[in-house]
Amino acid sequence: MKLLYHIGRYFILMGILLRRPEKASMYRRKIVVEMDLLGLESLGIVAIISVFMGAVVTIQTAFNTDHPLLPIYAVGFATRQAIILEFSPTIISLILAGKVGSRIASEIGTMRVTEQIDALEIMGVNAAGYLILPKIIASMIINPALVVISIFLGIFGGWMVSAATGVVSLHNYIYSILFEFSSYDVMYAIIKTVVFAFIIASVSGYFGFYTRGSALEVGNASTKAVVFSSIYIILFNLILTQLLLI
Amino acid sequence: MIRVENVWKSFDEQPVLKDISLTFERGKTNLIIGKSGSGKNVLMKCLVGLLEADRGRIVYGDLDFSAMGYRQRRVIRKELGMLFQGAALFDSMSVTDNVMFPLSMFTTMSRKEKEMRAAFCLERVNLHGADHLQPSELSGGMKKRVAIARAISISPKYLFCDEPNSGLDPPTAILIDKLISEITEEFNITTVVNTHDMNSVMEIGDKVVYIYLGELWWVGSRHEILHTGNKELNDFVYATELMRTLKK
Image 1 (cartoon, helix red, strand yellow):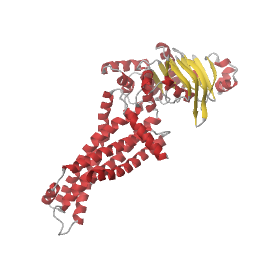
Image 2 (spheres, one colour):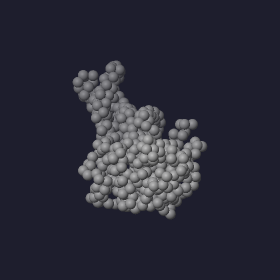
Image 3 (cartoon, rainbow over the protein chains, first blue to last red):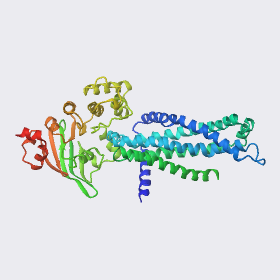
């Protein structure tokens, strides 16, 4: 019953977000600011994780496919497909759910408990729209860019470890990275990322916006935002994979 | 002028406001007083539309606020200013940006015009040289003054103040009270102040409304409040040793 209550309230909130903005230029400016805060500030962690994960995936694949019947391009091909199809869109989105989701929920939750949201509403500003909508739009724009960077860096990580350790020759690695490349795979990754970005920003915004009480509740809202965003990402990953690939 | 007509409000079947009817006049500082839990905060929230009354009407001028939808209310909301207990300044903005925010959102003023208006409002609340500071760098009294500057930046017709001097030292509290009173007269605003501070009552209470257990118990001026025979009101007014000594 409580789940239905939350689902209903979530969709009502989404409806409120779509009300006509008081001043479009203020919203546009806020989208740019949010792209910086939510996206560019996450670039460091995304880069580090992508390079190292790409390297690890390459080593793991090389050691587990060391068989004379397997083609030479297996390692690079498997690394590329793993990074493009799952690692970059899903795992990076899960990491962003932790970093960005907790930030959104705690920022909006703090504004709620310190009456800043009440101040906006009394002024006649659609507080939900002004605070959450720019974050959703910013995430849906910047997260795919982060994932594309992550794909490049993941594959670069594999190349780096190949050059450093020789688990695969560089010639073989580059050949297999290009082997039967389909641009639809990248499109699939971007579509998934856009959906996950919407989930992260809207679910976290929801928990932040309906925070009640004290600073303790802000912490709880932040935790719930990360947990539920992650669950919905996993769930929608399954649904989207079924819809887009099979 | 704001008219409150037969307003009722309950939470979980528990009545918090019971048939409240009163008028807040223009150009006067109207004070709502009462013990904690008496319903004065709920009344304030009903007045500004943060809570909906279960029954009754709230009328701004000739406009029935209670009967209006979200879009229609925007017209009145643009004429409202509110000072919150904790000031509710936007943490991510500087003092000037806080004061300019309503102007940026609801007017077509140029950046220069907005800055000039913000400077005027900050000057009016005696805040010199604080325009570039962040809210976290301000003292409690300064935050309240910035909040007042933000509230008056769009030249409101109605000013609401929730516990304006809570957490302030007595001289700063008096300063804030006087500022509210001066602004009310200067701009001919209908001001409603929610407080349980008797110093505020004696300083600025043009009209004082006492709420007791969700009911409108007493209405009068700050001069009348000291000589009333109302027992519940006297228990509130003379709750402190200082007031009892003054009475003697």
